[in-house]
Image (tube, rainbow, N blue to C red; front, side):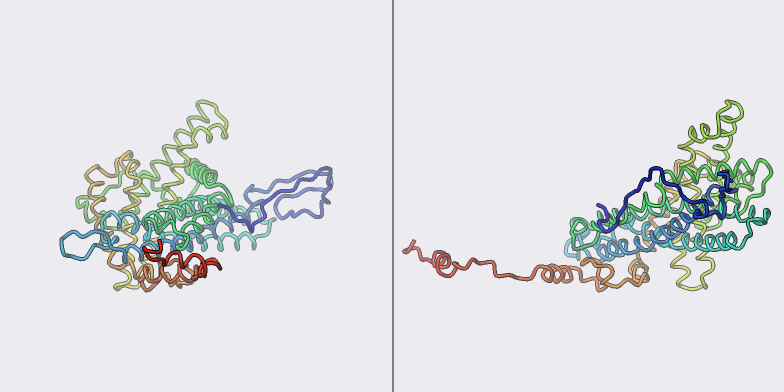
Length: 444
């Protein structure tokens, strides 16, 4: 594990003076007397990191699509066991549990793309606004700073959970291919080793998630002070309404409705954030803890609210992209993918939905059945959904992931190409060894 071609290191200086005029001072400044003026927002000093985080959220999709393609193609071609005597063996991807292993991850890969696109739009708008704002324009600068704050928080959460998600997709795809997944001919080993460093680059994912959670608490506190919230945290302004939200009388229909699903996530996110804000205010106002101490005590809650808030953003982005798609077979196909991802996500976070009484245990049983149903629907288009990534066999570089699906032939050709036949007999074979091997019983 590691990247041999990347030179990571550090340098230290002793008694080195840097001329004041050599310093970059767009936001922080040092005068001739050595007095430092801090920027209005600390994150402005390392805003370049945000661009890295945004690109890594997009990279998560670009890498995940390769490995989910390999696993889905292999599962659609590999047969194992037969349910009836005399019948062809069943394809792996036609088994319910194998579908559950891979198809929600295929849906997750698509969801990453829509979320990253939305984050890129937000990044370009915020950075352009900041670049075009004169630092002497206090009101304009404050508006740009608010946008950067929101971008800083969202990019932290999305970078963390996208890179973690991509790592999980690579590893689960590898395991789903059985022994072939461990073969160096099938790309998984180098792919995982090369990718997983992204969970610590541009900020360790755990630290970034805690940072995102801190920002959500701060948004909740600001709302209670009368500040208007917008962007991805706008739903906090509707907390009272969301607290009383539900599925209505027809639960099965509601669970297939994107608007209801989004509202369910907004409800549990707003309740979890408000609960954390309540505890934060209690720690700082009644127990007289400092802000740092209070945030530290609430580390677990900060992680949790960042996790579910980020998933809400991804789900909303996916549904919004589907809604913009022209009506027709394509829209129906991708809507099934989006519903699978959203329902599977609820299933994975079932505990918090039960905690805040949005769903009942019976509702969760229904959701499990719906996940199975949408896995079957997505299975029909699984090969088309992976072919849509338009990845060449050269890029995939995996014998079991070739476009033609004839992986045994591809595997054999790849192995023989990399291991051409060689003359392995010693020079004395014909004179000594061959006569010995060919001797008759009488000669023996």
